[in-house]
Image 1 (cartoon, rainbow, N blue to C red):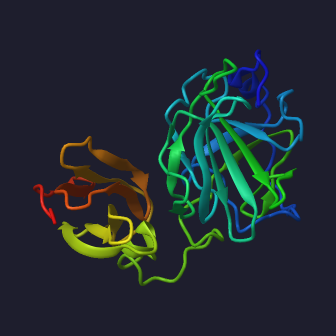
Image 2 (cartoon, rainbow, N blue to C red; image 1 turned 135 degrees about the horizontal axis):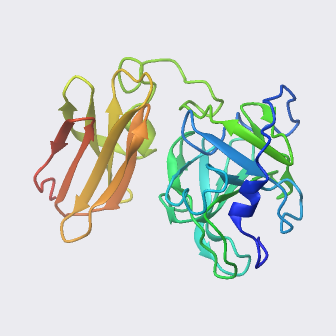
Length: 302
């Protein structure tokens, strides 16, 4: 929550002196939690808001004093988990908010989002895009920023840790090590999406999905179409073969008669998953890695 005079830009002004990345681990480290922003990005965090009653909540801005310059920037999952909340809230002032429950029962919360990319019940992977930075709130006016919390299974807001290191309260600049992985900050063994990529299309889309079509994207990877008979959903994911660094990637799915859904950005391992219900309905699907692209006709209609 934020009071009516809170401005994320004022929080950002307190970031003039970044603290060093220390080696003090927290007892509430959770399942290898990482910064909720893409690999290599540096963000400034502050817990000084008067609305942060627990003292452990963090407001993140990417550029100190940059006003709404962070609006629309990518927010990713801090670790593998299940989305237990994805909604627009009015009573607490969170606006667009997502909560993810992780393997040990701990929860991470991401609030004031401009957009939400995952629904309640979805399984997400560490580093997967879940939304974008915003300033949504039905109660308060603010500049764009991410309000972030780490909570215990019982709901208590605890000091945040990133890559096993406790955040340097009240202010610290942190560089993201959220570079893809199995939820512990370390990529699992190779053998998934291709050479250098630990993920498969099924892992990304989740349990119940089976691959029904795919297309190569030059020598860089491929885009795959999957379907779940239990949910009637299609899922599209683009996978890189040689996943060193990051590359511009896209995955999209268009159900005939409906608007196209797209997941794009700069990613290391995959773009997507993009899901939509298409029971006995034609779909158009495709993706891209750099300049290599594939676009299907409307197909898979039964």
